Amino acid sequence: MTQAVPKTAGRVMLLGATGSIGRAVLAELVRTGHDVIAPIRAGSKAAGIPCDFTSDALSSLLSEYPCDAVISCLASRSGAPEDAWAVDHALNSRVLTAALQAGVPRFVLLSAICVQKPKLAFQQAKLAFEAELQAAPLDWTIVRPTAFFKSLSGQVARLKAGKPFLVFGDGALTACKPISDADLARFMVGCLTRPETTGQILPIGGPGPALTPLEQGQLLFKALGLPPKFRHVPPAILSFIIALISGLGLISRSARAKAELAKIGRYYATESMLVWDHHTQSYDAQATPEFGSDTLADHYRDLVQNDRPDDRGAHAVF
Ligand SMILES: NC(=O)c1ccc[n+]([C@@H]2O[C@H](COP(=O)([O-])OP(=O)(O)OC[C@H]3O[C@@H](n4cnc5c(N)ncnc54)[C@H](OP(=O)(O)O)[C@@H]3O)[C@@H](O)[C@H]2O)c1
Image 1: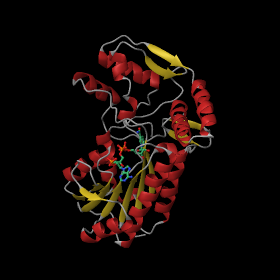
Image 2: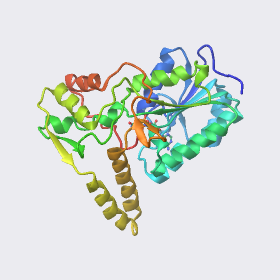
Image 3: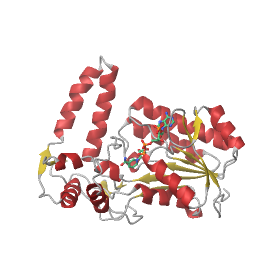
Image 4: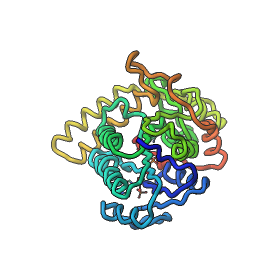
């Protein structure tokens, strides 16, 4: 396949420009001199081109504004199975079809490291689109980040209120190398000008070392200037909740959706966001690539010093 990576800044269609990573990618594209076409949902207050995301609408945008690349940061807001199949799979699929019709030579996809060990519906939806993209006749890169800062910042208000930091088990069941939105955006936009990233699936974390939830809690207490105080929750409680809600799911659609969200919670309570080694059947912090310079400790300090609330954009889905 030809290497279609532009040597200079070109025009990029960015999907998901109103999301956490999409906003950071937009800023990075502008900073690096790209023209950006950002279709956004009608009714959104953000700057962009209102779009209904049908195939026709996406195709006509790309014919009006020919692009050198597409970057998709689209993701289901809820993580619920139907929404994940509608957005992470079907919507991305329409974007890809429109990109191919318009002859766009490059596609960079934001995915997630957790799809390497799929147990959840939204991971299957992501993998289905990843497979379509890999089979498509254009240059693609799939970026699979570890944990975002916002997903590790949900307990600031609890701690400020004098409550303990909640951890599952001993607090060291899992670990991750968190990456900031800005560092991830630099990594993704950098893919446009790094031919060696073409045809690659790239797991990526922030600067190490890998941090367990216990260590994350210690960093947050330090940023707050408070003595560490933890409450250990048995992870089995999540399985109990899932069994309970799944029973109700036999009669209620909303209970089925809640059961899936509880399964997502259990997944992140028990699985690390690090590269999975199939030979040793274990997570490998060493093998998890690092990028950028922003640390979770910096982020916590910033949240506390600027009296910012918890990153409540944080939803359950990695
Ligand atoms: N959280 C983590 O720690 C983590 C770690 C690794 C990977 N990831 C992956 O990163 C992605 C999440 O990124 P994020 O946090 O930046 O997402 P986000 O903030 O939830 O943003 C999602 C974007 O998708 C758009 N979108 C959702 N549904 C849409 C629809 N039906 N039509 C049009 N646009 C739609 C949203 O538009 P609106 O603003 O209009 O809703 C928004 O721009 C997921 O794929 C996740 O698996 C997350």
